[in-house]
Image (cartoon, rainbow, N blue to C red; front, top):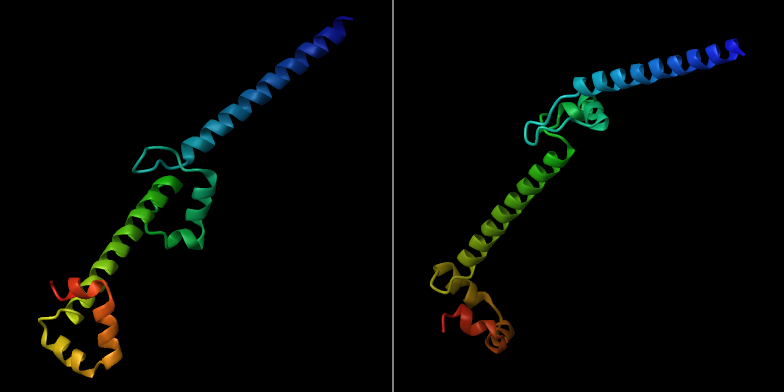
Length: 130
């Protein structure tokens, strides 16, 4: 009977040592992971593995975690979209400015039906500045 109790105690201690060893190994693994420069959170294992791969070497934000990287990319795309739209608007305005000499040449080349459609359009008065 005493041997059975002793065996249970030894098994419990071994299990406690195993759990403690797992906790320490997890803490060491987490301490190895770099911190995000933006939010200060630890990188995930996936992000750390991605940075170690060839794809990660070309990453423009190696110091950011997944979430912060996604936010930065979203801001970049929005800014690029805004620049593109402003450029297109400037080009369109330059090409469709009634006071521009190019506009007069363009008007001469347009067909009668195109000019008639413009006059019937609600945008006609706005483009002409009326």
